[in-house]
Image 1: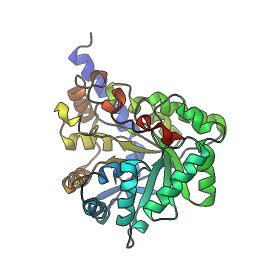
Image 2: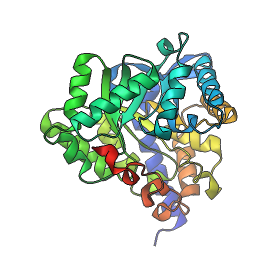
Image 3: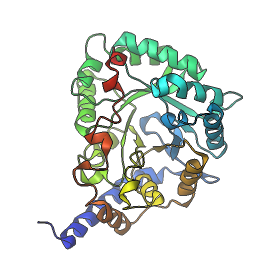
Image 4: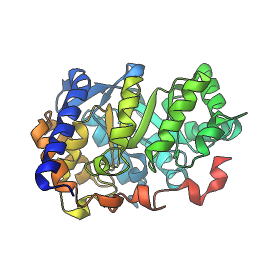
Length: 332
C-alpha cells in the first residue's frame, strides 16, 4: 500500500523529470506581446503555445460566432489552427475557411486531419478539406484517431494512407504529416514503430496530455519521451478532457492549462466554442512560467485519487470520442 509520503516522494521525482525534459521546449520559447511560441519539432516552424480546436469552433449555433472566435485568436497572436475532415460533417472546416479569408490564412499554421486508412480515401478527403478551407495546401495533415490495433497496419499496408501522405507532400498539397490518437499509448507507439520499419518519418504526433493522464495508461510517460527523442512536434490536446476533468473539482482551469504547458510540447489545442474560453486560454499563456518540481508534484498529488482507472478520462475508457468507430466507412 502506498502511503501519502511515498506518493509525494514519487510525484516529486516525476515532477523533476518533467522539468528537466521540458528544458528544450522552454529554451525555444519566444514571446511576442502576450503570446509565447515554440518550435514544432523537426518542422522548424514556430507555432503559438495554444491552438484553436477545430471541433469546438463548429459548436456555436451561429457560424459567425465561430468565425469571430478564430479571428480574435489570430488577432491575439494564436497561429496554430486545428481541424479535421469529419468535424461537424465538414462544417468546422467551412467556418475556418471563411475565417481565414482577407489575409488571415497567411498568419497561421493550418492543420487538418483525415480519417482514411487507404490511399484513395485520404486523397479525396484531403481534396474536400482543401476546398472547405479555401486554400491550395495545409501546413500539416494528420491521420486521425489511431485508436484500433489494425489502424497502423492499414496505414502502412498496400495502397495505405502513408502512400497518400508522401504523394501529397511531393505535390505541395501538404508541407508536413503526422497522426493523432486518444485511446491508448500502445497504438501511437505502434505507428512510430512501423514508421521506423518502413523508413518513414512522421513530423508530428497529437495526443491527450493533462493532469490525470500521468496516472493512468499515460501518453506522457509512454509516448512523449519517444516523440521527443525523434524530434517530432508534440501537439497536446484534451487538457480538460472535454471538461470532465474539471468536473472532478481537483484542479482549476488555469492549473490544468499550466500543467500541460509545462510539458515539453510544441502547442496545446484548446476548445474555444465561447469567446470566454479563448480569453481564459490567452490569460493562461500570458501568466505561464515554468513550474517547479514541487508545483508539479502538488498537482499530481491532488489528482491521483480521481485519476484512478481513467474515470474522468472518458476518451480512454468509453467510445464517447470515437467518431470513426461510429462511422467505419470514413476509414475506407
